[in-house]
Length: 284
Image (cartoon, rainbow, N blue to C red):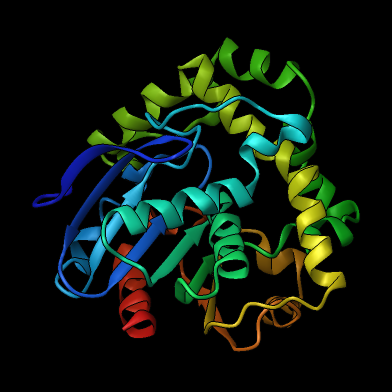
């Protein structure tokens, strides 16, 4: 897994991140979603490494990265804090400007990096998401039925109890889908009570401080300046929930393109060749 890549624990001002990096060329940062670790990219990163310097961290709280305190209003796991970590990481590795690709929860970190650090982000790719404020503003019955976990995960204590009672049954992913080594990494994470709590803080921040940051940007007309590419999995529920995914993102970014990909939700595992092709085409 990740042949030719370096695995490091990198100390930054507020956190220590576990990071896998390798390849050569312009830098691209890959940000995973819930409940994955950086290992979700193990089929994509080798396809990108002839073209890019590829950096894959565990986000704060996830995997083996450190777990800061929750903070007031769950601010310790805000996407703003996670984006600050990412920019600090890239500077530490010598990259003042870079492309960023985010999936699921990682897409919110990528979006926040583009909004808060426009001088650092050359291009943005988001996978399987619309902005948090947009999702909540459209929270009708279909969204609540399909994405109920957003609201359950935001509750105190009970989500940790439910998940940790049987993590394997709760999440239900298999080594056949993920690959043996990536599955082992994920399996270790979902059985660690501190990691499970931190992953849930990510969702709690989403309904609290992250929503506030999004709504503040929308009120102020603050938009993403860099080219933005939106991809969604055709076998997942985003196209069922939203008739015009690109139209939603055009409220947030000045230059938007995108399309569906034949995949389930975890596109980096389900269709890595097409995802890598899209990244190479868009980010070079």
